[in-house]
Length: 290
Image (cartoon, rainbow, N blue to C red; front, side, top):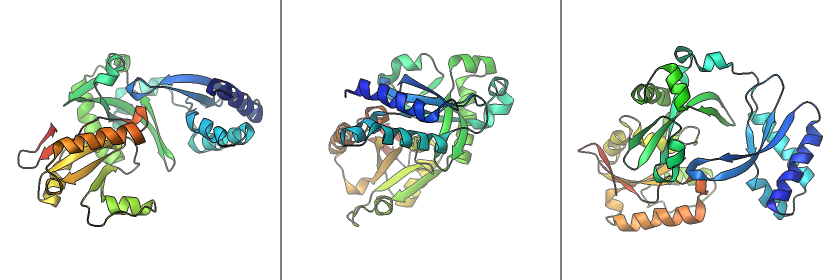
């Protein structure tokens, strides 16, 4: 089957298994960097917030020999883990005083998201943009969030400056930064690495859109104090960045080539943040494009 045929077959199988208890609808969503992904929106009548389960990974399993009915069961199992147990009422979302403690942000690349940025509040930082979300729920299986639009910001009667100020406080509370040696991170995944390499991973505790930690107030300064030297920040994806102390390399061009190469070979298109490194000067407390 082609990918299009597969998505329709999987939608049909999930609908048959779910029966009348769930609504199942195939959709195409525009993701980060302008990438279009196919997914199934699954919802219950009593709940007005629905997760989207994306299907590209399931198609790869199908091509490797999995049956459509088996994959439909997997989709429903995932839904049971990520579904919402209660509705979010629209008046509550548009009540800024009630919702402001749930406002958070992410980092995206500017030039790949120009059209999307016209529709949402955003704040530039270097060649990136800070964009804002409502953090609906955090569970052991991940996070659920809702994009803040220009319309929502206007109904709240606030501006980007206020959104950024409140989001900065919320990020440290809801999604605190996590800084670990790359050896510890890879050993947790059962991967051996050269113990002599001085490299570190910076993300948040959910490892989801954790590259935003690089602009947490004081975060890079604390890392500089720990390392006792300047360092490079490699955006390995929207989910994390790699910290490389300056003494480990003086070849910024090589780092840029490495970031671009890893992005091309290993990172999903919608998860790419940038194709070059950044440099942090701890004396000036300044992050710059490498």
